[in-house]
Length: 228
DNA sequence: TTCCGGTCCA
DNA sequence: TGGACTGGAA
Image (tube, rainbow, N blue to C red; front, side, top):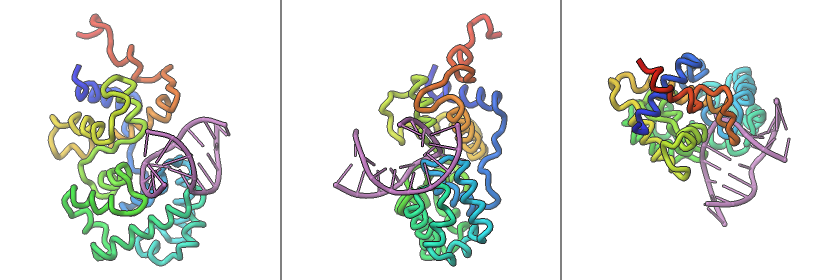
């Protein structure tokens, strides 16, 4: 089976097993941006604590984040770790919005996908995954988010070699929905990444735990007599 | 100790 | 390509 077809099968199987994930868990697009920074190599549970701190301090908005002193911002986001570089990175994001987009997230979102992605990648603390997460979940652009979980799934299931790069994996993920209507791509990529994270947390950690995984090969490839 | 919904730099 | 970065939970 072609890798893109196999990945599509994985998508439908995860959707059946887990149901829609309703991502990204946030009230506003800007809160998505903050969460995307804070969750870098950090559990979402820890991020929720920081988000609660920021909400209480009215720092979940652009104006709030611009106004808060950086040392106070560090204290607020302490639960999710890397407080020094993440505080500086969040300040740099607001500075970029102010300098290039009149302090408005929607004007950044209005840029072409490639243009917005380059602008994001120029920022400190934004690598390819954070850039794509912001593009997809905060700005509504149809891009695939590649994380360590997806890398494990596609390599462990033999769709790509173990040394596959970010762009190779992203290219595979993009091709998975190439046959779907263009207007559905954002929705599919949204759901797909969320489902990959879920199966990753449950089964595809550094050491795989395949027992009960909806993607276990037996479950993924049913015997011929089970196919109508 | 290991692991987090990674990024950066030598 | 390997380590440092940060704090907290299991």
